[in-house]
Image (cartoon, rainbow, N blue to C red; front, side, top):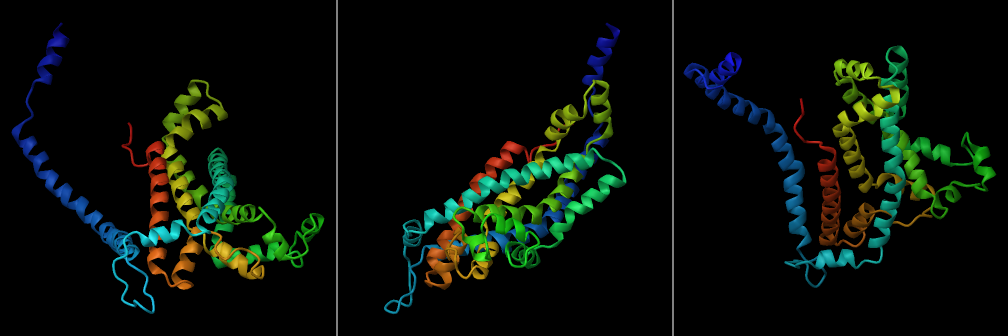
Length: 321
């Protein structure tokens, strides 16, 4: 009874006035500090995000200039109509979704699985394997592409025997075979990006307090139970972040199919991805409103799928203690 009365009295004791004033005085300073840290990001968001999207929307609602009407003017949704009714529009999205359906699951399983293996192997061996996995990611951009051109060319490839065994004698046959390009792009993007994301997810695993692992071990959790029931739920935001960024990268495919088409003697469709179609609208057809409309359609699709990933993974949720 005495304890209950003591707890009741202590819960009704008012906060001293001096303490309240210190708390209230600290809030404006914290707010100013938060805005100071946020200001560079807001500037970059405006310059690299809001302003380009606004300009793209303005351009998409204009009419393309013609010799008879070089001034253009307001065209309404004519740019969006030109994109959606183009005979290449559906095919480009089918190609991207086919590539994402193969690449993204393999990418995420590879990232999470290898990160868990590294985290379960502390010491020099784990550090060495993390470095080994990162090496292909150092060959980014054109360097990675040159390496894959070398591998895909049966006349120079170190896997020449494999190509000849499946009846492929030229790089044109290797790249332009029906249904084969999504698998080639999957291999290229997987080895280019998996090492960097392993490091990110491993960082999330390293942030888990050791007390959680000790408590799980005391409860009899083995290595599999520890990975599945403890580690994976905690690093779900890191997994969601990796899925979000890789999804955005997949929808922006341009360099790989564009250059593969050139080395394969134009054996591939010139507009294999939506970004290539937007490029053709702008610099082949000189229809900049249609190109802007294509970019906005891509933005809406990726933003919608990205929001689903964000809310399902708890990427920006509050940290639970």
